[in-house]
Amino acid sequence: MNTRYIAWLLFFLSAFFGAWSQSWQLVTVPGKDADLRPAGIGWYRCWVKVPDNWATLGGRDLWVESVTLTIDSSYTAHEVFLNGKRLGGAGTFPPNTKAADSLAKRYKVPAGGLAKGKWNELVIKIFNSDGKGRFRGVGPSIQGYFLECIFGGEWEYCQGMDPAIGQVLQNKPNLAAYDQFHEASQVLFEAPKLVYGERLSPAESLRKFELSDGLIIETVLHEPLVMQPTHLSFDARGRLWVSHYVQYPYPAGLRQISRDKYYRAKYDRQPKPPPLHTPGRSRVTIHEDTNGDGRYDTHKVFVDKLSLANAALPGRGGTWVMHTPHLLFYPDQNGDDIPDRDPEVHLAGFGFEDTHSVANGIAWGPDGWLYGAQGSTVSCRVTRPGIDPSDALGHYFEGCMVWRYQPDTREFEIFAVGGGNVFGLEFDAVGLLFSGHNGG
Image (cartoon, rainbow, N blue to C red):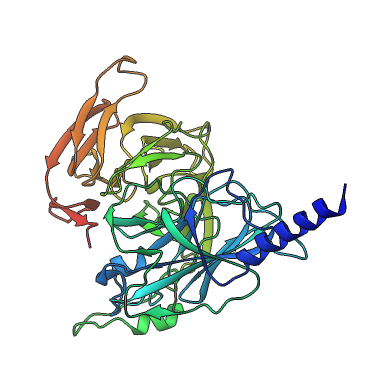
């Protein structure tokens, strides 16, 4: 190799890396496989102006607390910063370099993390081992409850170490600026690490309640004994049964393949009933006051590793569990709080397009029927396994309703329709049925 060729090669390489090291350069995201970046640490930057209600602070707010950032993962290690504050990352940087896995990552934007009416700075730090790192899919995106913005197109890129970040701009920047939002349709998935918001102690929480004269409120159970409880019931011995809907909102083992702006999703398959299901985090527990001092002092798990299980109701020689898409019965004839065998599937076909509207709230009616509810953004086609033929159309209904089931005769019928996003049922002393509304 002659010296003239080596000189030209060195000149080209120095020019290539020198160009990338100059402040911020305009690039396209997600990019193509052929696009190269210099090996080493680099920084991507863009700007976003979000809807005002994403940045409004003033108590608990659904819109503020629903904002997440999704990266359909790069081939490299990365860290994500919003207005200079780190949201999360994947893989590791030098000296102990490790590339991120191929799974998409979703990071929660904390309340107060976005500036209202201004251009927020999104920066992604990456490490390229071979120059081929890029983003997959359509590029990173930011999602709220109903809207999303996909950052596909112009970005700025800076090669090297630690540029100044953390700016919030009053005026729209000339490059890499996004403010076009549309109805959310990006598929959702569970974050690899659950991010908890600010919390109070049980005692502090109790002091926050404001009561009318003559009312008393007491703490009965609190974390970690209970987590995401959605249903309470009592057995003949006065014990409290609690359903912990911890797997919400993502069914265990299922992959979301599409959704609409109302969070109605389609999944890659129908889940099977236990024990053939993919184990999840939901569970049913029993709590008892053994010495009569008004405090629950014994706690046991009746069944765990459930998926979309949000209600449990003892009775008829066992316990009924609403484990969407199935109504299950766990026999326990001797009452030892250990299921005698695998659960019986009494009903199938309840929908789970929107897991905060699934079948729920099971309760015994004064007529001996088991009553349940269905929310606003799911549909059902209920069948009775073992009775109805495999090709039976079943009972179809879309939206809010109350259904009931007679365990002895295996009859199923729709009892009432309409209302809000029905969640929770209760009968009073004269047989009137009340329902809750999970609609905010």
